[in-house]
Length: 460
View 1 (tube, helix red, strand yellow):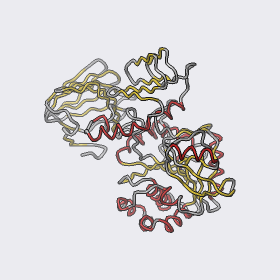
View 2: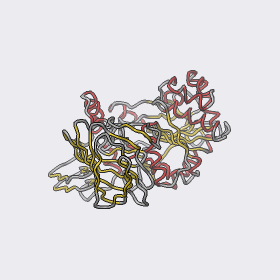
View 3: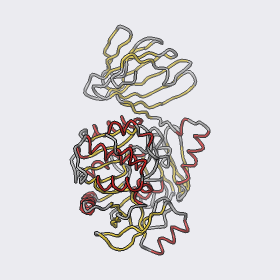
View 4: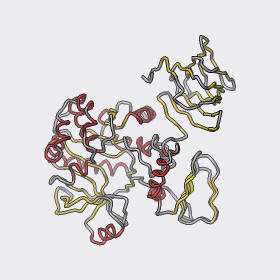
């Protein structure tokens, strides 16, 4: 068996914590591990790291690599989609990868899962995966159906038919319904939430794509590298629409474990532990006479007074306040921000790079202040800026700094000045993260004022 983890999505429903350049699979919710790391960790109960394939895109490649390194699963494979074409092409590409590069046979089972869901308990989940694999080996397409607990409009639904293979044949899939239809499904019974998890053999997947998606099938016949090069020609379609809704081989297995797709702030409220008044409090927050309210701080003190059924989320550059039950509308707010070309819709205050990360602390006319973290053994490119000078102050660790022809070691509580139009490089030769404060001064302070002369990460 191979596990395919889909980690290319850029959801907006958890704004402002999640942004286009830092989507929810990299967020840490309900523990120390990101949602992506939690997903991979769950699968280690049934496979080795080398049996896991993570599908993402170029924008998130370094995020994924950082997570794999951090949690000791570097042996997992990473596929980079050249274009965002939805889940069916991503899964087809991973199947081709498994056939060509991992030496899998058509009888190999792929278990496909999103990278940003919560599932527990983990051992029971591992047993459900093994059950799904057994059914998939009989030539079925297997999906898990979540027993609905309310008339949820944010999920797709699966209607179960006759009993088959420890579960039920699928009568039909329904996209996210309106409230009245969701309530009708709940009253009628026999409906499950669509979990987005699937299991099938590679051969079964290929046969169903051949039968129902001839354009994608044509690409799937190509060797992996050629398919990758022509990936933009793939139809943009989900695996549900492309195959599951059309196939007669789909079986839904009822799934009674705890599952949460973390699709909105209401879902996070449900997932996190609560105080005696039903409040979720995360970060530096004070709830005063609040009930059934989420207060989340990512820096500043947040005080809530007399709030009920309210969501308050603070980040360094955005504060969102919403009524509970209305958080699905955050996507519409983000769409408005994009129309207004607001940076906040896309950029997170913390930006990740192959060498580490930086957080913008101050962004004002003529100057910008960043907190930069360089991981051990990493270094930035040899570069210069035409429009700004920089002043570096070391807070933690030791820096090796190149300025012009001079190389110096800078230690904690020491600083150095980088003039405009001067080649320079920052490195961390030590064993602990290097943390510096960078103060930029100049008439133009954007990231595209970088001329690279030498870069280990291919960004020249």
